[in-house]
Amino acid sequence: TPADRLAPGRYAAVPAAAVPEGAEVRTHSLADREDIVFLACPGRPREERDALELADLGRRLAAVRLGVLRSVLDHVVEHLSNRTSGDEPLIRKQLVAGAIGDVMAAVERLRAQVRSQRHPAAVADVHRELDELGWRVAQHLGASGFLATSPARSLYVSALVAGTWVDREPEGEPA
Image (cartoon, rainbow, N blue to C red; front, side, top):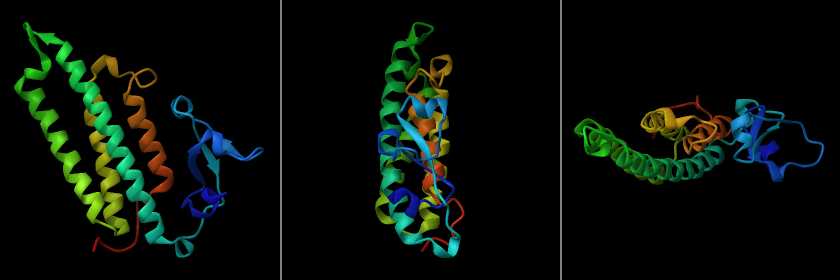
């Protein structure tokens, strides 16, 4: 499969429907809910990897993750608008509104960075920041953010997917 040839590690996150019959896969309870499995791959030594091809794939994956993050953020804003403290929606609390604003600004900055940066190290940095932002967004769901049944699950699974496709320790510095 193309995943076998391109994946940098021993497993590649792929849609469950795309797995050839008899292929070795690993599953994860949350990824299962998103129809994602982890296909065993031979892995490739660093010197055999096409760093720019992987970085390009990482950029496309980052764009998807940004969309997932934005979607969950919209859900969080709705959730916080319906929760009150002292007869006022939580979304109107200065600290909460500021935290949401910070995430929205970071999403837009990362969107621009994904479009402009092609160096593998820069792409890895974007994914590290997406991991952090996903966690910050999920925290706003409080007890409603149980991973198995909330939109926050998609943030967690997107981080798992990125973990199989993005080289988190590329050689060199961003250009």
